[in-house]
Structures are given as structure tokens and as C-alpha cells.
Image (cartoon, rainbow, N blue to C red; front, side):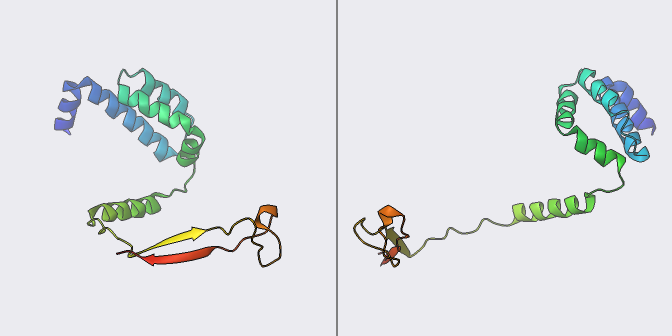
Length: 137
């Protein structure tokens, strides 16, 4: 703890950030969101752009943050699992490029052709798609 105290004394910005983080932790511990507005103002006026940006982001979704602070329910376990999956996906090698050996071309019948229900596609009938598959060479 002595090393932390000296570090925080040596770097006032880090000391201020540490104090603000501890204040937020206290809100979480007590499930009391009442100090949130004042805390956000402290972030904004701390003189540190990153903290001011954090305050702005929290304000954009403040009702959800208040709910998260004041209720015992959270999605921490789910968020952890999602993060694990994202990390796994990033560590897998990229999939090889897939090339289709055939191309498909579809065309609408001309407007003078009638559909199965006897109406013209130009007058609301549902035309049948004609597909031609041509092997790529």
C-alpha cells in the first residue's frame, strides 16, 4: 500500500482518477445511484479529457447506469462469456476464401408472358424465376 500511496502522490492525475474510481465503487457497493450526477460532474471538471469523455458516455445511457447501480441484477457472467467468445474468434485463423464453381443468372420473363395464375407480371402477377446455372470454366 505504501507504493500505491507514493505513486498517487507523485502523479496527481492518477490520484484524482483513483479517488473517482473509489467513489464509483462505493456507489456499486451500496447500490446507491444518488451520488451519480455529482460524480459525473466531478469527472467532467477533473481536467482529464478521458474522464470527461467517460462522463459524456455515461450520460448518454444514464437511466441504464442508474438501474445497474441500484439493482442486484447484472449480466456480468454473460458479458464475460461473450468476451471469451470474442477473444476466441479473434484467435482463430481467417477462413480460406471460398470460390463458387458455378454462377447463377436469374431473369424475369418478358412482360407479355403470363404467370401460373393467368395474369401478367406487369399487372400484379407473380412471375416465376427462371434460373440458368452455367458452370464456370
